[in-house]
Length: 331
Length: 308
Picture 1 (tube, rainbow over the protein chains, first blue to last red):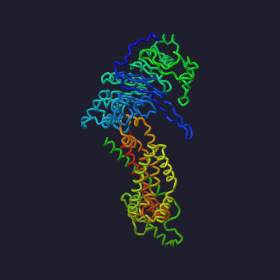
Picture 2 (picture 1 turned 30 degrees about the horizontal axis):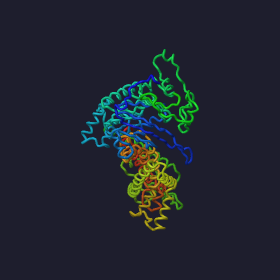
Picture 3 (picture 1 turned 45 degrees about the vertical axis):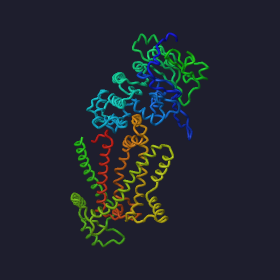
């Protein structure tokens, strides 16, 4: 892999978020008084530098959403550490501090907004909680401002969420996330519930906002083209494990991990000649159940390069080239 | 918005009048179709006396004429005299009984709603913990127990065994046991409704959104969750209040409460026609009003509901 050369951005910008050996298990009842841990996220470590967009991809059920939620303490992690803005997120105080600086945009704009609240109250509630205004007029002014930032008419502040379209509702969700003037936003598949024609608008808005407000994103998605378009770096997950991470362009054009390679070969290309000349790598079998994980590397059951070693030892995420880490024995 | 609401209420009230009219008509003719009459008993009076009595109450006239006369009376809020309770007007009897029943029923309904909501929310928050299990077992048991069993048990323990409270429901302290006996069923029912609807709401995405905003747990529970979870309780509580206000035959009998409940059955058995009509119309009106109130409350609690 010596052809990959890149300047390591590390050290140039400090890490805003560091995730160390994060584990998030859920107990799933398997019978009367019996339960089994579902390893939604298993020993995941990565960091996000200030001002970058880290794209997190993987097929559904691989634990990418759980990573986002655990970072923001919407779940109590089973093990591991999360450092945000040089503070370890552990005590109640540190969680409260983080909620002021880290926010989340949710996947489903239909169900993630309280149907009994007006838009003004949805956007204004974070301001109330963190006491970010001096008087009512200032609160309203701030709400109007936020609505304008995300391209909503502030005249609609007294309406309820159900009176808006999907794209508009996602804009409300974004305005709500931006209300506390966060540094970091977890975008959890923010466009996957939207109409394709709206997706581009919202993605562009995410990009513009990131530049204007110098935000840092963890951008979770299963659409590789969307992630490649928006991200600085990309991380790939499979069955709760992080298997590859690297700069967006390099990872997209020269994937290393066999799973990433097959994932990328599935991306549709709008060029019939290219599509004819490159055959898609089809994986055998299904994703194993996370309740019944294979030993060693979770991908070995479907991996074209699997060896005996893969069944015994889980490969570590190792740096294979500057800025690029891969978890595979056979590369 | 407000004019739309006013229009809706007027429309519903007109429909309610039609409903009450239909109820009056159906009750009137069905009642007359039941064999027997108010003056038939083991010691039946002579045919001459019966004829006189029937003439006095207008029962000798053709049925359509009786019906029209009765409707005229209803319009002027005159429900006529009671046949069995000599010299008393139906209207007075109902008002008198309703005052007592409403005090008892109102307290029972309020108790049922408040405690039901609190217990239901607690059970949902502590889902599958011992608090939840205790609340569920108790509420299932009290939903399953008929009110006369509960009333009898209460009487036995509080009046006879421990002699804490009077058994007679005519004093203020005496109302405590009937209130408990009357509220236990709706309370348990509301507890179960609140729990399941709260469990559903607590799993919703917008609750996670509220948590991510940094909203405190108590505010999440009351502002976001309970407000969304209360709809099924409103549906149930409207008619429940109407029933409970008009008195419970069983509970009022057991505790000797001089309420409305006793008239419902006794007037049918006695073929006390004006009394049957009066109580039926009264309950129908109350029911229609409570349904309207709960429909309006839907709108208040859920802005998505479109009245009309």
